[in-house]
Length: 321
Image (cartoon, rainbow, N blue to C red; front, side, top):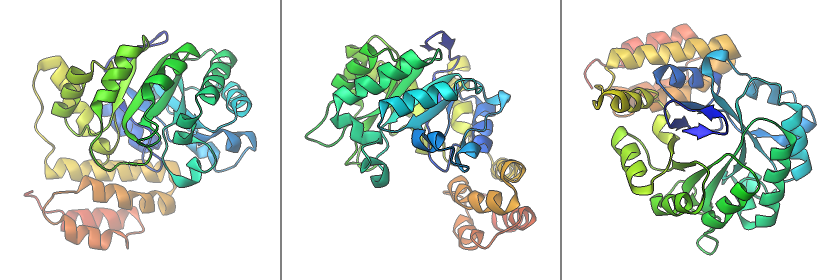
């Protein structure tokens, strides 16, 4: 998959997820074979006002290249100016979020609310494309609600404005993440534009990804919730593409070691207090379906140090799943 002049060797993309796709998790997904990593979304206004908390979201490691940095906002001049201001940072793609369904984002006219304003979409994208040299991509949804299913129209506008690719989540904003993703809208977008189209929604395994590509013709597949606690999905996708075989799912010891490695990275980059507390959610995702996981989750919220986490995982995570 080519995005601008950049070649993505494996067309499988880690979706941007607030509170999930931070630097430690991205590094693990990259090691497993993710072709493109998307960072947590960053507020263009927060950059403008030099918000101190935003700096941590901008951390990038050379080992994760290629990586996409995602901005959100609703003011064309702010997004384009901030894109220019951070262009020297070591990301390879700038993405603009037009799909976030969270109320506090939508009520400000940002994220998926932009789907209701095609003219503003064009202005945001065109001004940002002109402001920077790096390729600009956009993430959208099927539409805002059932009365505003306009992904095809918006994708055409995005292409006309000069974007290098578009990612389409097959749900409306009103659906959030409920119900079934509409892959047919991804197919319609692919048929309507000439730029690469990345499909998103309900991909949790190799079979899902291959079926999405077959049914929609999309150029790449973006994986969100299917990657939480499951960085191995990228190993499986890469192996299938290269050999036609899907590797066995990770054993309990492999899962345990991945969690501990993840925790060590969290502590390295965020300190023990924050890193271990953030690991609590990740542990719940990693251990879904495993024997002993319910008891482990009962205790995980009391863990405050790496050594406590290690002890808990050794004691509660039973070998046979």
